[in-house]
Amino acid sequence: MIGPFSPGSILMGLELPLASTGWRPFLDPIDLHRQWFLLLIPLAFGISLTYRAVRVATFEKYWLKVLILTFQVVLAMILLGVGSYLFIQVAVPMLLPMPE
Amino acid sequence: MNPTTHDHLETPPLDPIAGILAIILPGAGHLYQGQLKRALLVAGGILGLFFGGLLIGGIDVIDSRQDRLWFMGQVLVGPVALATDFVHQNHFKALDPVTGVPRSPKPGEIKDPSTGEWVVGPAGSRPPISKSLAKMNEIGILYCTIAGMLNLIVVIDAAFPSAGRVRRGRVS
Image: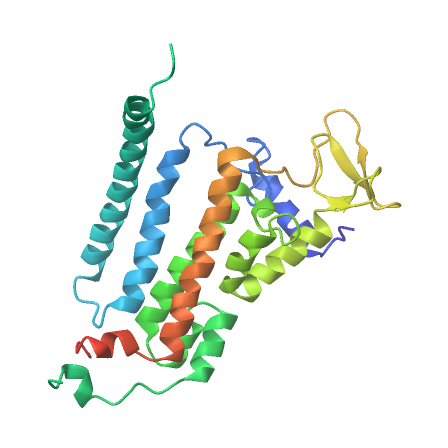
């Protein structure tokens, strides 16, 4: 049950400021179903931020290293996507053509 | 064998207290070791990913019953993940009126306080949470699980102070 001071009621209280939009943060998913791939960028940034924080000995050029790793992760994911597309759409039909 | 940089350095000692603190709260282990900047960056990265995942997919992305395998990765974030799952299981789930199994609400359902079951609410009523589906659910789960996996690296780094950094002869 959701009491007046239960964690559930506190979370549900977040509904009030955004009542006009209808979206309740942490309770409803965000509506980015068409732009979902953009969420890869903050994901890659978060991974780079944490990974570099434990890897570097000094924090000299830390943010540059974070940005480079973020770019590398995003680029690798794009290349993997392109590679997968070419494999399925080009290579597989050439190797195993469908019967007429 | 030729002497290398790490041959001249002592093996880094085990720091179990820092390891335990890192499990309790991301970054706390490094804070205990006096590495404030590293602690803040680690905490910001891991908790940012974890709460980012919650923001994307809603609290539904942390579910030890329905997504047990994913939860095993998410729980590595520490008590924050356990508390989130506790809130989800105990405050946002109710019994299915037919099967009696706890589940998330369907659109239009509200919790009946007397029976603890989901019932169809009056027109226009909203359930306490919306179950995330498709990409938003997958990406939200992925964010939280990666946060947990990263915290495992952080816990190891805190428990074995600067082992990786010493090995490369780049001690600051």
